[in-house]
Image (cartoon, rainbow over all chains, first blue to last red; front, top):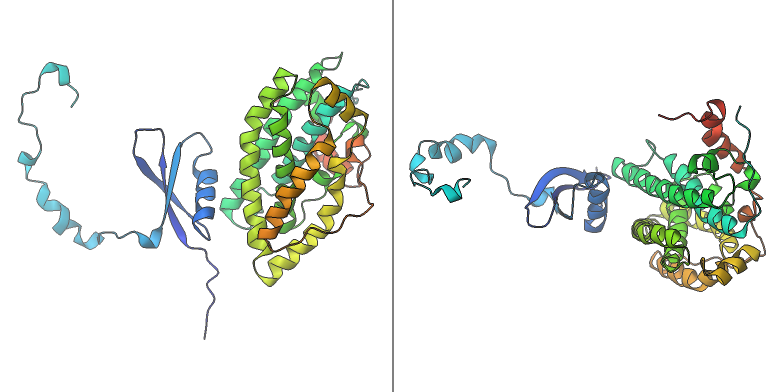
Length: 97
Length: 257
């Protein structure tokens, strides 16, 4: 039995709010191809002046870590305080590091 | 019940109403897709475009109101005229049809408005030139978005192509009106207010041919049929859309929220 896929692929949307800042993930949408995905992203995620640039990427192209590996991957960093540069005495002028 | 407003017989006012009413009525038609588009992303896109058009209508109708001795505001012009005083071409008042009909009409009107706004940036009326500068950006996007859909549907499945061809055969009849000149155009051309309707015909046809080519569709042959909405003589559909638009202002004069 053959099935026809009538669902458009899923895309992840990243919006940059203004020049100099990073693109931030803001959601996802369905679209048939890259051109449509960009237009839909513009219409769905930048209606209230949120953006100055948009990236879209096929969701199935993103390689993600396995939630089951969370303990193994990330917990070991919790007790390595010396990896944070908190032991330096900073001059007052650079207070907000 | 709020009585209808009366308009002076002024070619500048009529030139502005032809533009403002085009945006107003097509904006209302596109709003009818809210909650009904085939996918939610396109639902939002169509209503975005509707709101862009309403915004353009507000600017142009405000300017049109300034031309009247009674100094009408945008709401009075939008909601308190008789049908004969609306001067949009018939094309934009036709019922929304199916999705192919909607995107093809959007492509036709956006292409026309884009060419018009481009020229109106040089209008002798500074306010109209400023409105055109802002509206042009919106019209460029509307054209791109609609043209993409025309290409997808025209060069798509058997069904999408059939619907596209049917929409094209019907809509094309109403395009001739967009490019017919009369005294209003002559006055606008003479005063530098804006281009005569016929000036946009060749560039519009060239851009539409490009879109239709990409969609593997062919522009239908010219006919002698002429619609007459921009002279105030509308199709049978106009009364219905106006009654829906006007009901609230007529029932609750000056109502705002």
